[in-house]
Amino acid sequence: MFRAWASELFTIFWVVLVAVIAGRIAEDFGFALWVGTLLYLLHHLVHANRLYVWMRGGRSGRVPAGTGIWEEIYYLIHKLRRRNKRRKKQLIRMLEQFRTATSALPDATVVLGARDEIDWFNESACRLLGLRKSDLGQNIGNLVRYPKFAEHLKNSRDSATVCIPSPVDEAMQLEVRVVPYGEDSRLLIAQDVTQLRFMERVRSDFVANVSHELRTPLTVLKGYMETLNEAGQDLPPSAYRKMVQRMVEQTGRMQSLVDNLLSLTRLESGPPKPAAVVRVPALLERLCKEANVAEANEHTPVRLKLDSQVSLLGNETDLHSAFANLISNAIKYSRPSDTVTVRWSQEESGAARLDVEDTGPGIPKEHIPRLTERFYRVEIEGCRNKSGTGLGLAIVKHVMSRHDAELLIASELGRGSRFTCLFPSSRVVPGADRGDPE
Ligand code: ADP
Image (cartoon, rainbow, N blue to C red; front, side):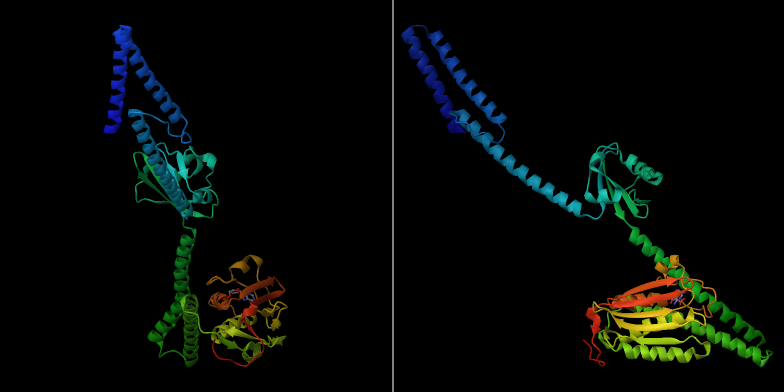
């Protein structure tokens, strides 16, 4: 800095000196000084113009060559520009990172201005709120038109949330929160809570269903016990026996409900059991034999067709429970004159397949997708034994998913139903004896 001013003062000194000498020679000192000052001014004007052209030229212009104080000025501006450029690059990088991070956010984020106009939004906002680029500057209340949301926008507090359906898909539930920030801006955050709400509903339905299912046998048991308590000695032996028999039936029903619930819990959350080779043909032979003996008086024959001898890699207890459920359902929901066919086969792709087919009354189409839900039951006319827990097919589905298998249900009213378990070839073992665990 000092050097620059020294050089500038040196120039002024030279101008004055030349003006004095020229004034002496021309004998007009005032005019010579005037010319010197004019030249000095011209020198500054030239540099001021260079500075102007350089500044206007943006970043492409090269640093102009200067002398005296101008050299220093050019150098300082150049330094300042370089620093600004670095900062700008840094800011752009940070902005990019912020954009990438907010785009990756699964929640919709919208920046709202003072009049609730949209200033910015992330990609999730397009997906959840249906916002488009052309919506920038629009009032959010005109795009998300729910009275609950409008009310919330007006009176929102930091912690308050409101639940609304998504404008894109009514089935999607959004939890919206509006948080103030800065001078008069607000941040709108919308989270997809469809799955959460569904789980909450499933849980409350589940508790309601279990309570309902247990209440019926408990009421019956309580009724009989009260009767026995009050008039036990006066009852004729036949009535006494009948009551005890009904009580045993109801306790059995409660027990199977609890057993099924425990199996489901174990299948849902327990660790996977070690896989072993399960000889399915032998297992099916055993199950069909037992079913035929048990149902002998009812005349619903269970036919077994073993088109393949392949075994499966899996858990025998779970597979036994799933296959037994399918066979007992087929018998339970058929009339005595119907037949049940159990077929074990292998497809060309190598996948193994179990079909449990009956010629029973069939299931109305609209119920089929919901059959594997817990406690879901369909009232079927003409079935001899409709008592069930509604958990059998839920257990089958879970066992299948634990074996990477699929449960397919096909049914036609008046013609019968077919329940198919499709096991991938990776689970299939060529006809073998019981093997060691994996
Ligand atoms: P449940 O204990 O009631 O049998 P499941 O989960 O095993 O419970 O079955 C659910 C419902 O599916 C049953 O209530 C019944 O209406 C229907 N269902 C299952 N298997 C058959 C079948 N083979 N034929 C007709 N309906 C069936």
